[in-house]
Length: 442
Image (cartoon, rainbow, N blue to C red; front, top):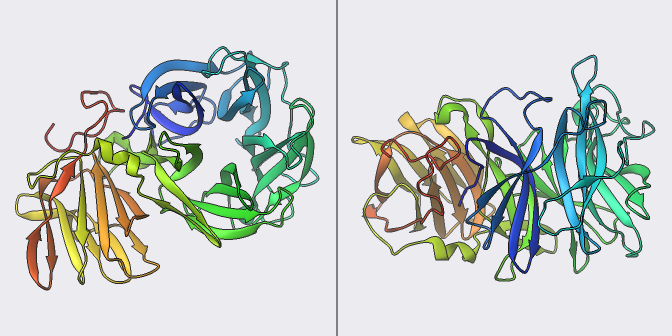
């Protein structure tokens, strides 16, 4: 249900798939609230899965380059993709910091004769594409990272999108999707931004996905800490902004075809330092897949039915990891955890809003509903809480307080029990910092 390598946390990632299952390459680093640009993410971890839910760590697959090279200090977000009988991979290299302490970023290229995400060899000793100062910041406050590569519209060349900074806009609003093209992956021509919203600080981890009508672009917006979507008939546009996809907290999306044939989105989710409510937010774990629904004028994430195989028979006993469905007939409060007689984790829902409160009724997260919901689905996995309104993913938050109790729903008609289905964890016995938080009582 959630994955991080033993003793570490996960940040941006990429997914490979073939007949044998799935492979994830991911940034990995120690648990800390202080991000060190040059020491936190110096290697890619690797994990494998048959179903996108249960992941097995396979060790480190890639690291920083030799001293003096463009990737000597850190390697950041990558995109591996099929190339011939093996793989190619564009990835972010950090060579050092500017005088003002900003990481100098560029994009490099590596190849492998395998399809399992291992045995990489670099192409040359330098990057294949850097930011062009005609359109993008190249020194302080620059961005040229998180490459994602697809075949162009003609199918004869390659197109790359990256997280970049638009020089024509004020810094606080300069987040954009940089754009470059190539006939052969090694020679790139940089173009003006593909998407430059004008109200975004950073537009990270852009992902391109083909649709029946053209292209879907997903990107992570730094200021709101959430995923947004754009669509276009062709790569060159025009691009239409479709708005948010999922709630704040879900970040760094990747689209992949699940074993049942559904298109799903995997994303990262944060944790808190020392696994306490008082800890600062830090990099976290890979979350379970959500179904990607693309309709005219909108995109949303929904509960993926492939997770149902990980749910046990319904019970009314207290369990730490569970899914419960609540039918709504009016304003409702669902208590998930308590400390003695005091509720410390509660989901509230009325016709217009869903919110989650913690100890003493402290607000944790809230979401406005597009339309009145008839049913809520609530998922708890360790400290994580996710809420789905009529199947749509609308809220996620964290809470480390309290002990599991029998779920109850309170309405103006009284109090009723809420049966839950316990979640079967793929690795229930992990006891390092990257294991699922076991609750107040292990």
